[in-house]
Length: 361
Image (cartoon, rainbow, N blue to C red; front, side, top):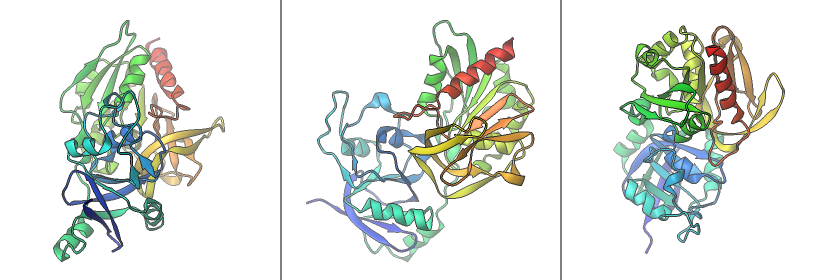
């Protein structure tokens, strides 16, 4: 008989469902993603650290578990919620099913709930805390924990601890990838373009990065509140004075804005999915992008100094990119390295490479 499991939202609503994956009680911030494919990338994206992820698409797991598609070695999310999961995946690359994967990684799963209704609640109410439990009446102490839960220390938890180097044949450029929870495909896109990539941990200093003599610096994606990372912001402000080309993605975009005097804000329910439309302000071209973030850079009077907004989100008008006019730096909120897609904005890596070449003369 399938085990009953319950999702209890901070606003008091309860969703009964069934257990899969690991057992245990979990409290976390609950978010949703609208992506129809790429569930393996979602499961292994470090930007989901400490969160409970709801898949809006109803059937998950049909092509199994493929380690070659992971964005990180292990999941960083706390729990995974789906409408239905495929118990017999069909794919020649698959090595196990979703239930086995979650169980082996200690990730609590919940299925057989109305995810459409759940997503609508989060969308209307905004991101909130939630509890997954086997007990529909968890008690006042647990409910207090639920209400008071706050995600902290996210970047140090997912950043690598040591420096790593990815070499490519006939490398023509050296890039330092500052790892705040970097997805693997960021480094792979750089390697494809003839770059040796040195991955440094979030704890690296500006002096340590510059001693590597990079042609360019890549600021990675990552989880949590960008403003919490005061040490990184201070070091990044020093790097901005070195006249080395910089490209920031997602959290890297937000940190760069903060280092240049900008401000960030928490969004009502964030942008998570593979179908987010953005418009480039200069060309007026529209691109479909993959995104995963809960914070945004403020615009208007709060813009970083000597910066202009380069991309805007067509759903809610929030900032999706920044171009800096006094330093060789630019950044985007979305993921141009996206797997499983879309691939519309991979040209931004080519732009970064061109800026490195131009800087070298």
